[in-house]
Image 1 (cartoon, rainbow, N blue to C red):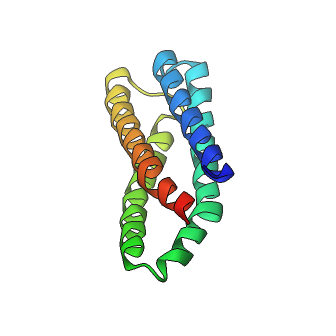
Image 2: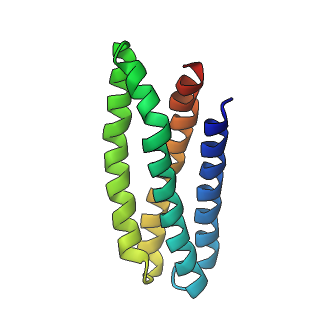
Length: 131
């Protein structure tokens, strides 16, 4: 496994752990709000790292591999939706929120991010290491 993939997987773990902590603390607490800001910063930094270090290599390889290009296009489209939902969530709850609405929105975001992490690690990261 490449060093980059190891780093990205560790970041996935930190993001998931931070989200778990938010669930425990509740977003209405000052600590919960701080963790929410931390989660947003961590997620944005992680996405930037992928954009700068992971995807250029994959996109270059996709120029000669139509299947890889289709896969990357599908992942990019999926990520656009996830990014918009995540940013809207962070915008809505950075200053707190109500219990039931937050719980529903948080559950949706958490499940979406966990699914995306699983897909990235099982498909995209594996493909990167093959290159």
